[in-house]
Image (cartoon, rainbow, N blue to C red; front, side):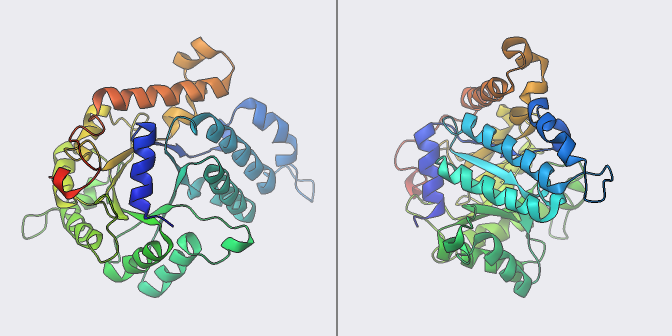
Length: 334
């Protein structure tokens, strides 16, 4: 399989859209059309008690995500599927997650599994096989092209993911600066040498990204980083510390990040980042701004919100290919 960073960059170039849509489905927020068709079954258990049926809830999440994929696949290069929204429904939820991954692949999308796994080395190895490895692929199981992971365990916790990603042509995005309000309580702590925790992690990621076999033809690594510009100056500093890593940039739209802010996550050539928006796109049908134009057509609302998201990033973010030359080549990297 072609190197992950090369595939992602090529997909971004093809669509001229350095963005991905996050699939974070919530049962209570699904369109009435989907919930109504499953509500009765979803509230009936074997003993007749009125409790949620995980199989039917999972089916609703899957049906919704498949509809979203149909609307956004012609517009964006990638989707980010958050496994946490499927896990409450246990085995049916995990099966639904896998089916959504498969459907996104079949639609021609790069798929990022937002799983945020890591542990001690031996346990990370099992997580790596579960989410990136070839085991089971011949039996209908399809893995994402890349996953998110946590650096807290250090090199031995990260290395199994890197090695599996390298061997399977996949990638990892390692948490560096996240979008949640309290992230600075840990990530912003100042160390004795004056660096912040986020900067120390970024230096580690920068080193991991340069590991043998991780750099693709276009000069970027299959070791990326999750960087939200909650602190724009910090994001600019992290960009310098991780020049070879593609940034997965969360928090756009519903979490308050603007296109002007996310521009800090790109390299000077206009590449090196992919911006994610989840709720702002997939639940656009709940917003009056879209309902006023598209009424109860929730599918049209999602497509319109996706186009608006892309237009906003294109209008205010760095122009793709602004530096010229081969994307991500050393000559265009600063």
